[in-house]
Image 1 (cartoon, rainbow, N blue to C red):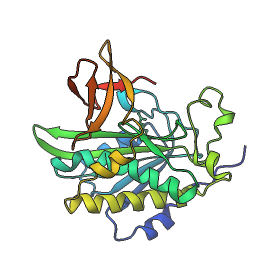
Image 2 (tube, helix red, strand yellow):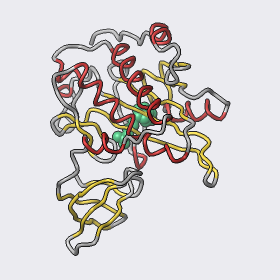
Image 3 (cartoon, helix red, strand yellow):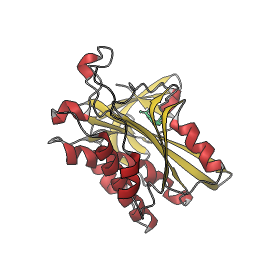
Image 4 (cartoon, helix red, strand yellow):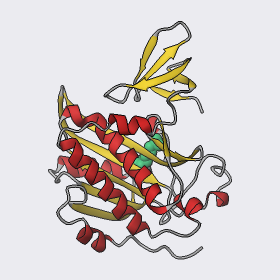
Length: 261
Ligand code: BTN
């Protein structure tokens, strides 16, 4: 295997000067999870926009505590600290997924879509996942940590266990991608969306326009039940509105259900 080209953090720092996202970088060869590191930094008073990034995570996690696996040095795995108003929180998840779609647009000829609530996919295969963890005290939001994992230079065909379900930027650009450039683009897009959010914009309509889940009959798993319905739309919080066979409209909350397939 080729030696790993480490991320060029000094260049990133320079090119993101003056932006909120990327206001500070904490780069690690190996961490248990960038989520934990960013939470630790947040509790230490780190500035909004602080990024913790690792070449390797020994306990990377996804939604519902699923394991997030990413071979060292090939992909991007990082978390960003935000301190938004609580009303802006739903848009943070949307901003992250939209920013990944924008990077796909920048670096490939493909168009990515979002499987509700936060998987970015190309051709039905997962490219990226977003995980948002919050520190709430009552109705007070102390901070939100947004974790983003993106398959950049992973060659899925070399990993038979995920070849059918995962894809990467490499698989669609046809050549190895400069991860530092991909990260700079990604953080710049997130920063732009976050500026819009802070100016009072809703990202809901843009995010909804990228949701491949809408307009389909789908199944959601909720506790031990599987519920079928037609994915009609999303509300302002990003919840999925599912029309069941009996005509009832069910509000499906991302933290509570998983989509079947
Ligand atoms: C999912 O698809 O369920 C979300 C996956 C999120 C993975 C990223 S990688 C960087 C950050 N650190 C983690 O441990 N998880 C997130």
